[in-house]
Image (tube, rainbow, N blue to C red; front, side, top):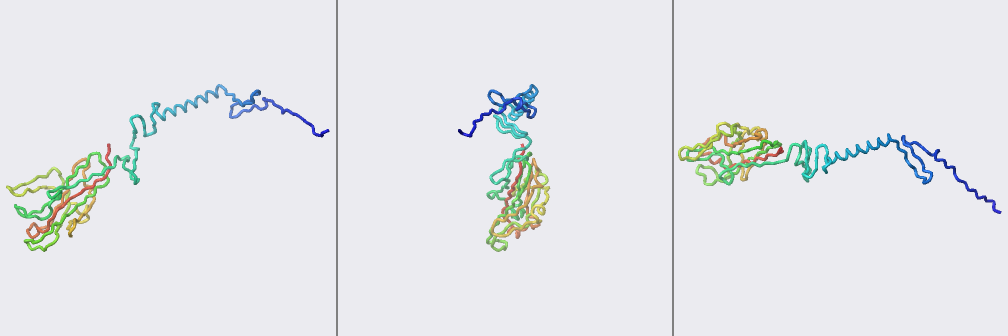
Length: 278
């Protein structure tokens, strides 16, 4: 006979002893199914419904209830993307901002004109009514809603190559000399004077020399066979929302036939960068 005894024992099962409260909510083990059920009071149910309602309101606000996605300053709807308070920043592939809170990044280029393929005669010239000092002009207009970031003026001198000069000048390349940059004080006070049938002349009475401030020198006397360029910042002289006129002229050169060798052509290029506002 075996010494082993088969003992079958059923553990005590008392649902009343297993009942617990967790976070003020009652849980119970069902005697038939063995499932854990939760007992929720009326107050608890009210709390749960209130919390769910707040979540629904939050969700509705995020879309504005009509299919729009909305944040503090951005709305996306069937009309497209709307940005408020200058919050939009767009950068190019070089990580440079082209749209900022200041507006759209813009660049304007103003170029002076003249009778020589866009170049103006400059320096000492012999005209029918006598020897004169010719000058070049650049007219600029800046839109009213444009914020100027920088304004770089490139002034270019193109030389003449002179041979068989009747006044004894050796063969070679000649530029205009002692050129100075001016700001026309009154852009509307410009006229053309004609004496009989002689060559016309532009008359500007009120101009301010700004060479030292822009170029760093009082007068510019370029030399050499190539086009020479001098560059300066004229941001402080531009009239935002209006017109500005710059003038270059040989100053201090005697108007004599001997000095007519010091002539050439001149062109100005103004590069203005900034932001265009709406």
